[in-house]
Length: 38
Length: 295
Image (cartoon, rainbow over all chains, first blue to last red):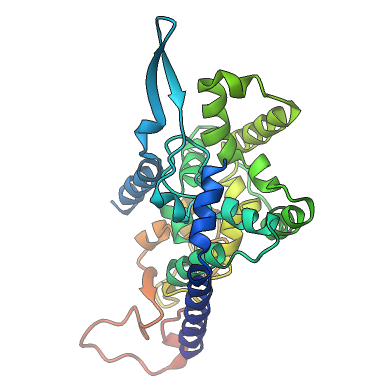
């Protein structure tokens, strides 16, 4: 159970970091552009 | 009651992301009323839904995460935002959005209700969805600069392709052989959903492949109590993806619909709970073999 908690914390931290990098790189603008170009 | 609740969530998951009704505007042309489809291009399209919901549909408010990931692969950059959004959701609830919100999963659940002979598919077929993710979402778009999964996606054909072909004469005139391939793929999954439980989700869905990587480490977990389980197998009968949650509560196929929690031996819990089946005020038994298990 403790292993699972550690796994969750590591996963959540990695996921949050990925999302933060995406937002920092202003990828939302690229997503909007892509959706407009359909 | 739990079952009905899931149906309500699935209905909301189908309606809410597709509630841009201005996408179907009516206009008067040559004395006849004509419906002209138009895409929503507001700020909500910057958000990726954790669902297989086509963003080419005129009523779609949000972006498709798989389409977004492919777009970044086509441009030759890593999709941090798309992958990050899906990872945050996966780390929170695992595959729960597949079981409770996804419109295409909802359609397959409804199709399975038709009376017909029913078939089980082998467990190894699940590996195809990882191949779909790696090849059609990451590798082929990167190499060919084309969104190949979106071109073939049955959910996209149903929500986006068919809507545009039905409502827009210009799009209808552009139909080529690929459209009929898409229709064939859609019909294949629609017909196989009648005898097989959620064939697309289990075998081909790349979004499900991403979320299933998080089932073991997500915040929301499924707990199983071996003390009370009689191994009757009823959980498999009601499971929409035909798994035995008592054998592996963190099965990557599990869509966390929680239908099986109607059985008292299975319970939704979180990673923070040490002993989800403990009765408050009663000391837990110390013999390891009798301890409730979360796997």
